[in-house]
Amino acid sequence: MGDVIANVSAFAGQKIVILNSLISPDLGWQLRDAVEINDSGQIVGDGFHNGSEHVFLMTPIPETDSRLLFAFGGLTVLLIRLFNRFSDLAKP
Image 1 (cartoon, one colour):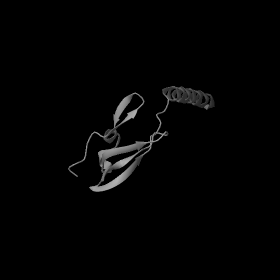
Image 2: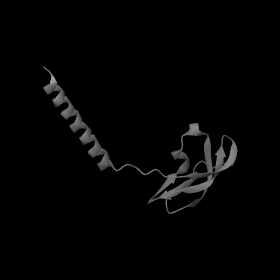
Image 3: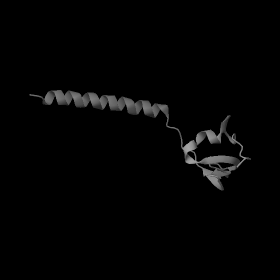
Image 4: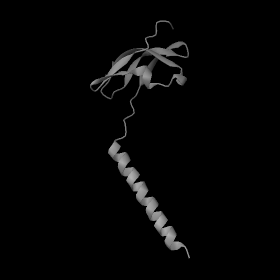
């Protein structure tokens, strides 16, 4: 495992991403080589999993749009206020 390259990288848009930084060290993976990336952003390559050599397939998980999170947060606040208002009206 001495030949593992810790900075296996790929392009994501206009920036370089260090693939090993995207994986929790607790999972036991150390990526060595990224070989190919497809139109969906999936990356295949090889590396070590718990000391044994394996191939890997990384599939990107899209980031949530911040506008969607903001709208969801606003809706949550509105629902809590409505719930509290109706709870107050139901009190004798």
